[in-house]
Length: 465
Image 1 (cartoon, rainbow, N blue to C red):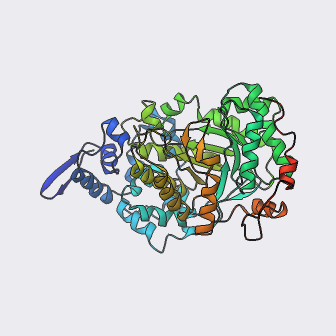
Image 2 (image 1 turned 135 degrees about the vertical axis):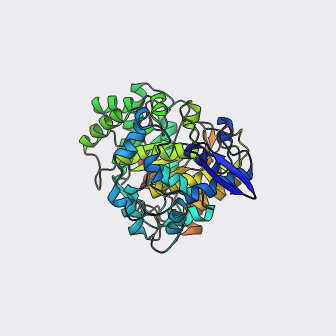
Image 3 (image 1 turned 90 degrees about the horizontal axis):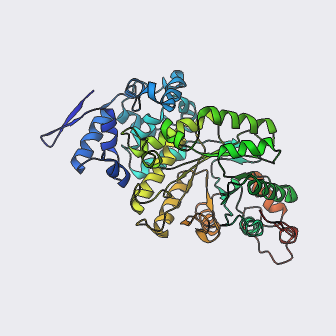
């Protein structure tokens, strides 16, 4: 179906809904690379006029990726909750924006609405929003998940302790874990990106992290971020697996390039759940995503990268995950060229995920060949924390020595806590107090060489992976 509008006495025509969505997107290098971006600011504004006047129902009738060709489209449409959607089904995309920013969109109303919102609806309305709109609405979306602690409560901000090492050296990883714990990080997850796919190395990493948690009674969860097939093999071998990790994308072809299908994720979810390792809940999936993955796999079907990203969240919510993390600047400047594009993408991803009912975190990051710096990351992390971010990443010195990119540090999380009053997960905060690492308000206490956490780390990582 063709769409037309007149702007400044000029007629703009769009071939289909995919072109409207792509041209309405804020400028970014990935859509330009794909040849689908608006050719001018005027065309972009015309597309937004068209989008604003479209009924929300159009996204249920006009699939951007054909139903018969894509299992993600089938999942999105087959599981759509029409009863939940009824509250906004009469609205246009522009009217939906107004509703989200208005008083009727309370946290309770947004939680009830989430199953009725499709990823394409979320992506569409985000294209009509200013950055402050994305912050304001996301802040009202409360998404709580539980495994060994409670994440996503209002006023709380968790940290994934990311102790990566270029050779999976257990002593080096143990040292980074200790560093993070002493700074009060690790309530989201203690999660390692392994350098090796060796099952022996993966098993050693899993056992190391589990030993840290058990030795100190830490109310948190651990994860070795390997491919889901490796995690299944570790479960079968009796390894102490807490969370199942997988990178996912927004189209069937993207996930095929990752070696993933919904059936495989179903199998891994059921296997990990059968272990019953959670103490306060059973949310146990951990997904990572990022704008540009579909295009880099040649699997975007002419759909803009932000909408493809939102579609990945449609797959994620099938599994009631504990954590979803948009690794926003990691893929590179081909997809998000500079700090401005990275900031906007991070806010979009967080907004769309929260609106869909997901516990959204963000790796506020960039690669060294992007036109971005740590000042841009400071801006994004403050905006996201104000928007109710579930968790961010904690890397020693903000410089990941294994993945070779720039992220956020343990100190960055302390800055956000001091500046914005963000507390940790309540169970983890209570543990910090018991360990005399923090006071009753969550503020870190001085610690010396005789601290029991330091003393208790003796012997950890003495072997090698």
